[in-house]
Length: 560
Image (tube, rainbow, N blue to C red; front, side, top):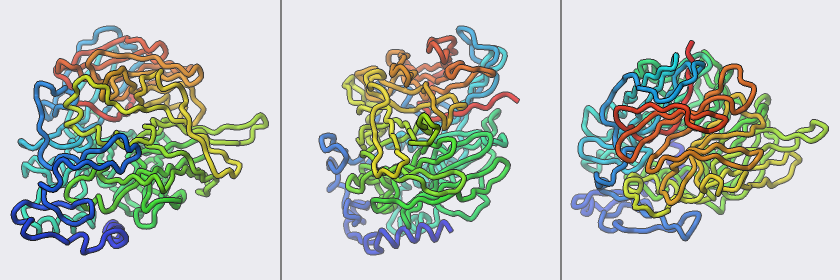
């Protein structure tokens, strides 16, 4: 199924001549890669080229360097530095008082190794996955980290080079026939990475799975030892190569979206605890563009799945290229417009499909249903970390950019984007800021909420904001949507990772719990931080033996 699917993609979007056309003399002298017209061009013709075909023409996107990134070690923050060693574990000295009710393990996944031998990767999302744990029990804290042993990681270690296609990196080809051979593997999905460096979830049956955008990058791990146990094999015949990196996971179900790159659309699927079989809820056909919009994440309400169709769309041609484009695996199609589709969880039927203002988001926060005074459903509200329809955020995450901060305020503005989707048949939805973006420094990403409020009306969210000038989110922020205010935590020069909320057992207030984050310090150190979920004041921290790289997303595994 996978092979047929990607072969169809190529047949629909890429001609054989476009794939194979190249100048042999240039190839022999200079190597080869795809140019913007999908032929081949020599390296000197591409150096320094600037492309401005993005959402905001005033923010040109520079084509990523074709050579390995050069790094100034003196200016290299530990957040963007490869992890020191493959594995470590030990007890940390806690400053402050950890609540005795906090019993379980916080797991955080993310890219943590950005080089092989002397070759440095280009992009934050290329790094091989580093899994971190913080185990809390009886006021004590045991920490550890370990590399996730994906096939991509093991092959790179063994062969001392990149062997699979990562986010922006591809294997280096010794000759043209090696490239053709890699294309053949791509058509079957064999050359796509299984580097599960994005998220980690605990399924309802207790299994813990690390995830990324590729379906093959679903890896089961042991939450205590952090050992990689093997691939999570889906037992159904739905096929496909990619899925949302952020499924909706509860004790009762696992929901995700499978983009269809052949007949542009999305399949919503459900998997019950104790099984590996995904079952189809329903399908949405895209209303615009040559391909589905990127669905890194999506929200749900109690009764509905919200399927976003963003104008930042998957691009089959870019998947095949031997060198990255300004938007990597995607293309910006503002003329294709943006849409939100609402699907009933029970029947799979579409109850609304509305056009909304153009948007760019990695992460949805939550969604809920609104009713009138008579209890009739009137609309869906969906919140996300929205980047003002500006695609430059992707290029800002190149490691060379992250490692070269000079004090200039270059972080693109972001906000909590609040969509309102009417359910009365209206063709349009709205998008507004849920609160003044200045409350959180006009930086916004990496949100978490009290999981008891998933799909329900909620008041609080926790996120990474900004204290400017900066080039990356550098604060933790508590968002209060009722008061439209934010409380912010900041440590000068530090880079905090996603704030993760853990509710106190038996709590009745939405913000009764703690917020956990891992902090990378400017001096090369790092620490685990615990904030009070209500006051947002620090209650404890524990120094790590050395600073860890920036991480992405986490989950909570309560003690049995």
